[in-house]
Length: 76
Image 1 (cartoon, rainbow, N blue to C red):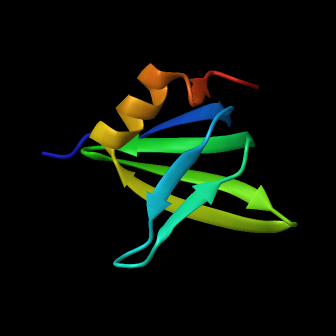
Image 2 (tube, rainbow, N blue to C red):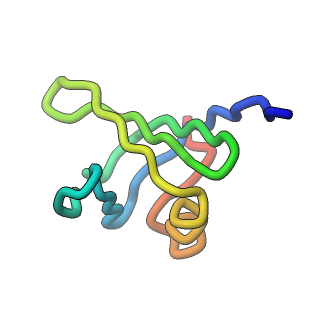
């Protein structure tokens, strides 16, 4: 049984870091992004230097960013 993904507009307002595979931690710049939450992960999409970028992070990490105020949901 699969759930329908939820897409949310959001804003990064403080450091949000993610790890791409086994690589180093990368930071998402402050600004607007789109978030798709499905199951136990969240996919963030944003534009940096005119290029679309995407990061998948575990939902538990995403929830911590929300609780700490680093990601603000519902921004349009």
